[in-house]
Image 1 (cartoon, one colour):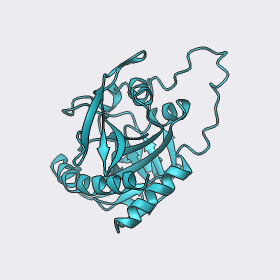
Image 2: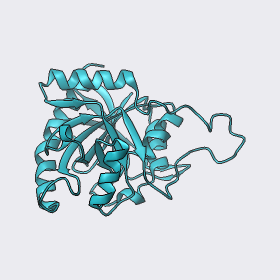
Image 3: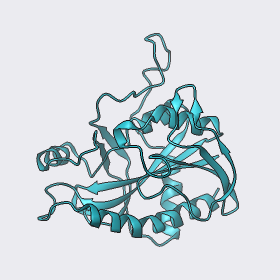
Image 4: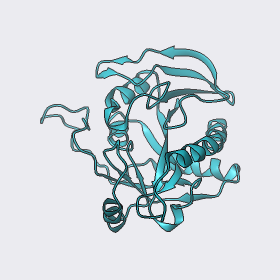
Length: 245
C-alpha cells in the first residue's frame, strides 16, 4: 500500500476519505501520531504526520523507528516522504521549487539509526548506494509531469540535526560536499525504510534559500507563507500519484 509521511505544513491530507486509524504504539515506541488509513482518488493509502497533529515534535525528537514501524505494521509497501527544505544550489534556491532528490548525506548525530541492535544481525550492513527507490522516483516524476509542475529531477539532500537552522559556514561546507538541499528529517527515516523493506522516495518543497544564500536573514514568516502556498501543490501531486497505482 502507498503511504505518505507529511512534513512541516502537511499534518493532514485534503481529499483523503478516512476509513480507519492504526494506533501509534509499536514495539519500538510511540509514533508521532496514529496512522490514518483512507482512500485518495479511489486508491487505498496511509498517512502519518511526521511531527504529529498538531505539529508538536521537533526534528531531533521524532521517533523515526516508531514512525516507520507503524507504517509497515499498517501495511505500507511504498512511502513518499514530504519535506520542507532550504535550497543550497542555484537550481533549488527559489522558494516554491519542488525537488525529487536522488542522493543524501547524513550530518545528524545521536539519532537511533537502525532497527538492528546486535552485531550478529545478518542484514545490518545492507547496501545503501541509492537511498531512494528508482521505480518510485519515476512514478513521482510522472505525477509531477502530469500536474505540469516545474520541478528539479535529482540532487543531494543533506540531513542536519536541528532544530536550529544552519550557519552560513555549515551551508558552504555542505555545498562543497555536493548538497543541493538541506533539511532535518531525511535521516534516519530513509535508512529505516530500507531496513523495513519499504520503497522510499522524497518530494521536497524549497521554502527558503539556505543560510548565506540570500542577503536577507531567514524569515520564519516568509517560510510559513511558502509552506502555505506550496503544500496545496504537493497534495495535488500526491493525489495524481495515488491515482496511478
